[in-house]
Amino acid sequence: MSDTDHRNNRRTVAAYEGYARGYAAAVPATPSGHAAEDLRRLAAAAGPSGRVLEIGSGPGWDADFLETLGLRVQRTDVTAAFVDLQIERGKAASRLDVLRDEIEGVYDGIAMLYVLQHFERDQVDAVLHKLARALAANGALLVSHMLGEGEEWEGDGGDYRVVRWPAAAMDQRLARAGFAVEFESFIDSERRPWRSVLARRRG
Image 1: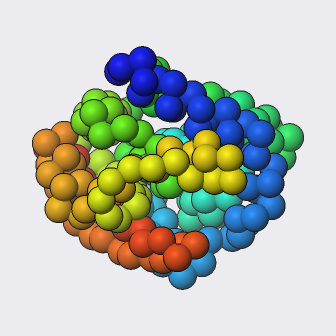
Image 2 (image 1 turned 135 degrees about the horizontal axis):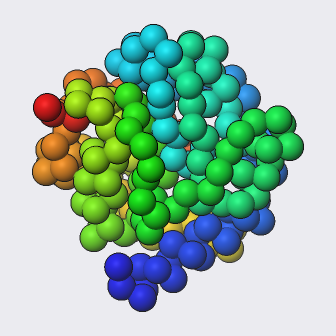
């Protein structure tokens, strides 16, 4: 990771540290529509009582939903304010920086939603390979990315790094890491197109 990549990511994380509670208030506490269906697909792929690692858990609303489906969820986030918020809610959550930290244990599924857009292009391969190593054979990954080309800074202060990916380019990266895409869904959030992918670790 270059010094610039490191600074870009730290800047984004710092922005979330200051906005965690506002984010939690702005995001619906119960997933619905395509979001809920994607989580149900992950639950079915992980199996009854499956162990799921959530990276970028935020306020924990998706983890709450997954637990109602019978999954055992390990909640993690790089943003300390999100971890603290979940602990205040009585949930077990821990800090994990997927760019730098190793993932302990093996999981039946991994959820990483609305996270990948904050990584630089040359960071994505290493992250996807790390996720593959943390999955059991045929384990499932639910990941989302913003569709399109290019990268920019967003937010009122321009502090949120956003990197867009065409679907074909992201699928190439997933295949390179040992994943086979099984399902995709699309949603427009804040007038921006997003794609979610359910992929299996091959073998």
